[in-house]
Every structure is written in structure tokens, then in C-alpha cells.
Image (cartoon, rainbow, N blue to C red):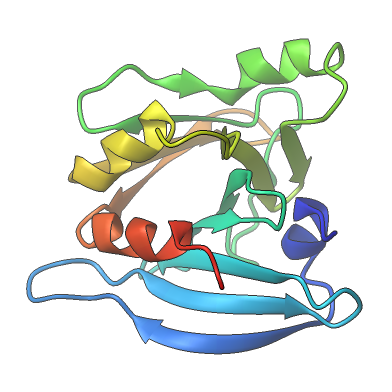
Length: 178
């Protein structure tokens, strides 16, 4: 079974592109199927990238969990503060603070957050049952995802992603391969 850390680290994975999900007036959420060369496990991934190179990706691993990954572009000098990470907000909803989740994670048997200086992976849904997690439902019907990441040297940066087209991309992501 492939873990989210392998995806975040960009290990040798064969990528099959399924094409963008853009529609008129909507953001482009690209769709990919990544196949681990060692296990042959398929992972569906949808992502969008800002003009400045910030990426937000959502992917489902073999055992069903849905993870998200926020990535700071390599061209940026910013390094994500590992003690605070990020906060995200969908439209005018309640912000979700990964820093608070990070503090309790040490008591959990399976990590739900993984991070490095340029990216943060976190679980958005456990992948069980027929009802997806609230954050994913809100993203599917939302207009804007705002991510505030905290910089190692102090301060923070706000990055906005359009959620146009995410609903269709999410339906594709959640399909099970036969």
C-alpha cells in the first residue's frame, strides 16, 4: 500500500494524465491517476495551481482515505512553519486550523498530518461510509478556498484557489476502479 508521504515526496511514480476538468468560466482542476511502480496501487488525484505556482491537490489512497496537499512553489523562499502549518477556509465557513490538529496528533495511532518545508498533507476524509466529509462537501459546492500558511521566519501568507469545477473533479476522484 502506498502512503501519502510517497506522493508528497514525489517518489518515482508513473503518471497517467486524464485531462483537465475545466468548464467555461471555471477553474481547471486537473485529473491524474498515479500508479506506484512497486505495488501497482492506483491513486486518483485532482489539483489546481495558481499563476504563482501554489498547488492544492486532493487525492484518494488505496485504502480509501482522502488526503489534501498544499504546496509552496520551489521558486518561493518561503518555508512552512512546522509548529503551526496552515489554516484553510471555504467561502465564509469556519476556518480549519491544522496547527490545533497537529498538537493532538502525537496521541493518535495513525498520523493525519504530514509536512515538510514546502508542503503539508492532511486527511480530509477517512474514506468510510457513503457520506463524504464536510470539508469536501463544502469544497464541492463552494466558490473559493483560502489557505493561510505560516512562514518559518514569522508572519503568514494567504493564497486563494477557485473551487469552480471541483465538484465534478471530486465525483471523478471518488469513483472506484473496477
